[in-house]
Amino acid sequence: MICVLHSGGIDSTAVIQYYLNLNKIVQPLFIDYGQISAKTEFKYSQKIANYFKINKPFFVNLRKFRDINPDHSLFSGKDRGNFHDSFKNQFFPNRNLLLLTIGSVYCKSNNINKIAIGIVGGGSNSMGYPDTNSKFLKSVDSLFSSTLDINVEGPIVSWTKKKVISFLNKNKFDFNLTFSCNVCSVHPCNKCASCIERNIALNNYLL
Image (cartoon, rainbow, N blue to C red; front, side, top):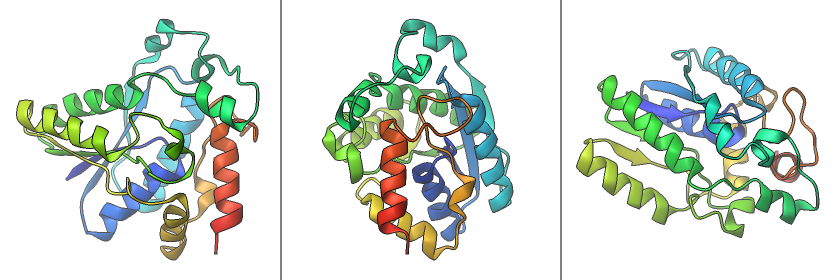
């Protein structure tokens, strides 16, 4: 079994599809760290689990985490400016490390020795988030494997957004089952970096 951090978005869903294609048992893990779209994200994560006929996503409530910086766009919904500014505003220090750390605790408590995250090397991630690359993954994997005997995997970290879309499309996945917006709680705003990147990817790459 492998635990997959799942947000209900395209990238983390591709990770689930990746492991299912390898006949692995997948346990989705959804973490509400206070993001404004958490409720909707979790709803889509549940829909995707039903679609794949896999275990229901385990829900972790870290909602009070938002109190660290309540004005951050991920928590407040305030996100103005062009794509570059939006992308910059959506960075939250060590968010992926936090998610993986919580995930590792869940894994250790449930005798799961692998956890995966949907980090993608192409698309806007190439602009420089320090926790969305193979170097970050290797560092966390080294730490967790030595302290918890848990391996951290990012099977699509070297992929481009085009490859992610193509991969899911070839597997006949329904993209309407996914949700990606960082500033609206119910409907996509179509203005934040996540929405723009998603729309461009689907419009440009969907076969």
